[in-house]
Image (cartoon, rainbow, N blue to C red):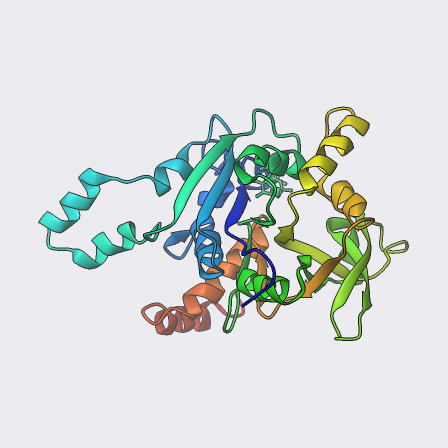
Length: 294
Ligand code: UTP
C-alpha cells in the first residue's frame, strides 16, 4: 500500500498541427498514424491503462475528430465482424478501451503549445496528481511500460516525474533538458529544466521525453505562466516554477523510445515493432536482406 493517492487520470494532448507529416496529417492527427496495425494513440492509451489509469482525457481540436471516432463504439462494424464469423477481429476493436476505463475529451481551440493543451484539461483533472502522455513518443519496454515504471516510483516517493533519456550532445536544442542531483536512495531529482538549449549552454544531455506525472497544482502555474507570456503557455516554464515548491524526479526509463513525430523515427518504429511481431518478422528480415546495399 502506498501513502499517496493513485494516478487515475491521464491527459493525451493530440491537438498539435503535426506539420512534419504533412500532407498525411492535413485531416488526421499524427497520433492516428499506425505502427504496424495500431495507431500511435492506442499504444499510449494501453501504456496508461497498464499503469493503472482508468480515466483517459484527450485534448483534441475541432477539425481532427478521428481520435474520438477511433475510441467510440462502432456497433455496425462489431455486428458485421460477428456475422462474418471473425471473433478475433471483433475482439481487436472491442479491446480498444477495456472495461472499467472511461474516456473524455476537451477541445483546444487553437494550437497554442503543449502547456496550453495540458491546461485545457484542468476541469477534467481537478486537483489530483495525473499523467501526461505524448503519443508520438512511442516507448517499447522489456517488462513494465514506461508510465508504469513512473507510477511505481511515484507511489514509493510521492514525487511527480518526467521521463528522460540521454540525447546526443549536438541535439539538446530539440528537447527540454534537465540537470539532476541524486538523493541518498540513488533517485535523480530535477534541479533545473531549460527548453531547447543550444549544445554549448545545455546543463546536461538528459532530454525530457513525452511522459509526465504532475501534481494538480501545475494548472495554477500554467495559468500564471500564460499571464506572463501574452497568451502562450509553455509546459517547461510551469514545471520550472513547480520545482520551487515541489520536487520532481527525472525517470530514466527502461525501454526504447522512438520519436514518431519525425519521419525517420516513425519508420524505425515501424521496423522495430514489425520485427517484434511473430507473423511479420521472418518476411521482413528476408526483405531487408534483399534491399541491403541499395
Ligand atoms: P509537437 O511539438 O510534436 O508539435 O507536439 P506538433 O504540432 O504536434 O508537430 P509538428 O512539430 O508540427 O510536426 C507535442 C505533442 O503536443 C501536442 C501534439 O499533438 C503532440 O502530441 N500539442 C502540441 C497539442 O496538443 N497542442 C498544441 O498546441 C501543440
